[in-house]
Length: 231
Image (cartoon, rainbow, N blue to C red; front, side, top):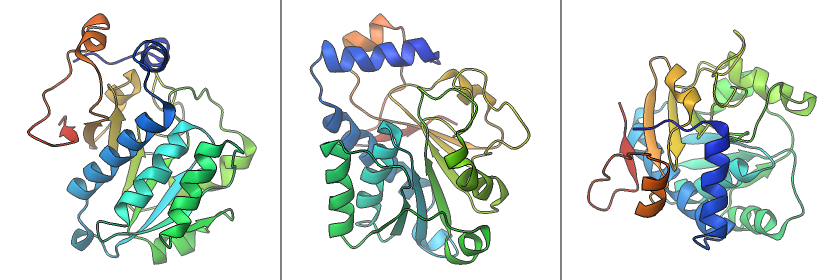
């Protein structure tokens, strides 16, 4: 199976939008849904100290995937709580936030403290930065990054562990060390730097012709599954 570099990941996304005519919200819904299903397989509610899940969402498409995943997790016996500090005025993201709030999910702008996270939650979902990210982390996201770095809870990263270089992986001892990574579309090169982490592939929407063009050699999804375990 091929691991994509940053340029290839961006190109694949652009082709899905431009050549195959997928819409952003279409792919975001499918990606977020597959993340929720993978999380439910990796960390069942009864395996956690509490079913309350902290979902940290950034301002881009990775954050949108987190917003979608939160909505679906709320239908799977989890209690999502969304930290979403930097919001966009784009209708798609405003609608995703509205949908979450209509399902009774709290969407907060205030960064939770480390003590609160450790006491109140059983799992963290990291949906802060996607494959367009380039280090270093901006000042406005440093508080939540510090919370994630200190946490003893399992962290599930969506597509890219936040703070990591998309190709080179962790760049300092302070980077997030996820317990689980859900790669979307295809794994990125940074996933080769995972240590003792579960690794899933989600986003079951890649056309065969696009897979062949980039020689992705994706694994076979079983039956109706929206994800596949890679290790």
